[in-house]
Length: 192
Length: 192
DNA sequence: TGACATAGGAAACGGTCGTTTCCTATATTG
DNA sequence: CAATATAGGAAACGACCGTTTCCTATGTCA
Image 1 (tube, each protein chain N blue to C red):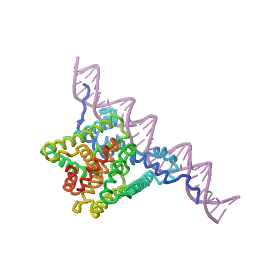
Image 2: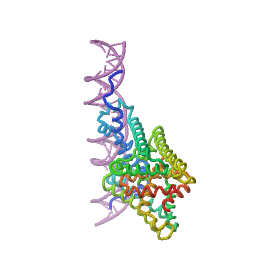
Image 3: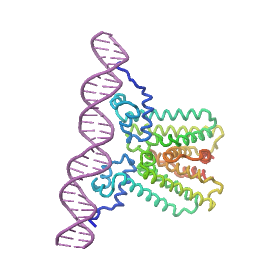
Image 4: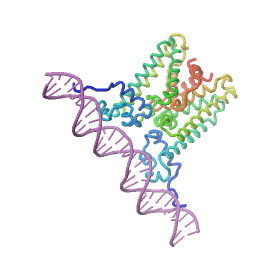
């Protein structure tokens, strides 16, 4: 009971995410969040315990949203190899234009990893492990469906692809990646 | 003329670098720098115009130092292919342990790229372009010495390797890379 | 419909930010 | 050796940081 919230929590988080993507956890100020969300700082502190909790919720929202977007794009891709290729294309597009300039929240958090507390670092680890597991699954599926050689060392391959995807987002903060098709083709040679 | 400086500028920069590597430009406070360098904030402002100039000098120092370290390791590697392999090993080691946890200043700056001013962003671009050019040179040398196929598309390959190297540093903030040899072997397949 | 629990929002909190001021110390130069 | 230009360093600056307080508004429930 009591007076109900006049704003949509989901929408506020969606507006908070770009702030953290651009400034990181430490660099994002309550004033930035106030501007982006339209809430007063008082209301922010009614809805969240503190800045840390805003970040935590925004981080979860971002990871969930990215997972959904990727899952949707992977829906049509049949073979494991094609799923890896589509994942690469997804990241190449995310690393381009305004999206690329805004940056990846996972990557931004990674850079701040040493200054984050344990629960946040665990959430970050989970997000990254999730990405790695997804890649690994696609690789193993590819081996099963014949699109990837059966004797490929999938573990180092997954590690490498995980780093490559994050690296694309990093360089994408400055430059748009050129010639997506050639980049995908070259990267896929790691699977041969 | 006048009273000469009582500290070594080079040494102060070497002590300032880890502060920026850990906290980034925005996150590094004058107090952090004061602690790390042993200088009072007044002396810092005597030696540098402002925090931006401390960062600029520290950034140059870091890039120069990294270039030298890599050049030294590349001294013995004869073929272009071996130079690429050695570069990968260099980054894998840099991404490990306390060095990996401390992070790469280029990568940290990349994340903050959108909030940096034009001159700093230009310096960052130069550093990154330098890395890319070095990779490209090794690839072309490899084609000349026969260690890399002559019909390899070197441009996308260089882009990919550049992103991969940065990505290794990113993930290295959280996890040590495992099985360096397998990772190098897998990455080198992009050159086949 | 009146009591109440919570939201909304302005204002202020102490702390830290980057930076400047001001005074003293000291090596260099004529 | 006196004059001077700069370094060293303590203290203070206004601005902004994350957070809290306090008062009003408004929905819910008995």
